[in-house]
Length: 373
Ligand code: BGC
Image (cartoon, rainbow, N blue to C red; front, side, top):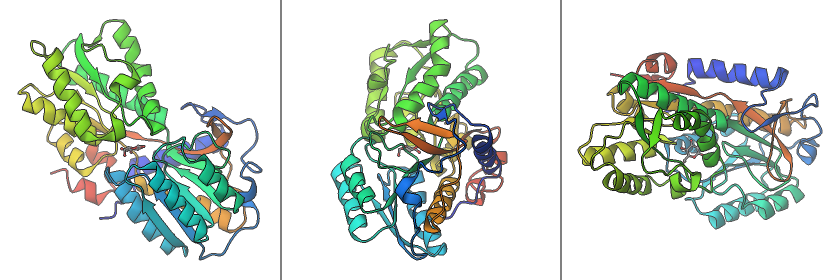
């Protein structure tokens, strides 16, 4: 079912855009651009425009989490409603498959291609080909790295997302586990996804000082991104890692909290702890997936971070409509260096959800509100 825009989130996303447009929002590894806008940065993409019913490609990485399923559906529906001809494909986490899908979109005459990369660094040559054919490239949810062939990226701040996860872990420990020190473990997402190290970096900005001052103990000692990462965002791999952490380090200790980069991994961690017969730790998440919203409401998962797909898709289509008319992309002061160029970023603001504020956050999202019973 289609989700309605979340009231609070929509308001804060709009505020974030207003902020980035007016005064610069140079957090998030993204920097503030001194120029007055991005005009001129979008180059070929803004020249000339294209037919109002043009084919628009959308290349998604997989359908393994709810946000991508929502994106698949909404891009199909909303691009059509805007008069375009959508061509939406998903790549099952496979780089060659995504490269071929983008090639096919170019061959089918797509005028703009929206790309959420399986691997941020592996699309350079196919995107160069798209650029040479005059196709506009918009990164969606994830940065596209190491190429000049990208016009803009639309995403929720990924360092900010991590900061919210780290802060929520601390808040949850205080609220649920008495006085510290607390035993915790750290999980991160798939290393090919440019978001994953940034979520982790944001979380560690908050957690590292508390590890240093002894409030938190990472009992396994596994505090590097590479140790915490979950290949391909695969929940089963996270569950297997949690199983071995529990048997290796928690035979005679209780685990108080776990940093989880998204909801699927959060539920895998909770399942592992449940199966080990231990008291449930405070676990964070991301995406406000239906199953996790229920789990939070039941007092199992502690929190998630909402980043509504509908807002991202809307913002992306606004950019495509500007390109269609031959206009420059709207101004944004946020840019992020992708290894080759400073990419204009259209950045929305994520929001933490716990049992305490869930009803408020989902006030305008009937399908999620319905889960809070
Ligand atoms: C997205 C998350 C998602 C994860 C795994 C990330 O890039 O930002 O919303 O949970 O990929 O699919």
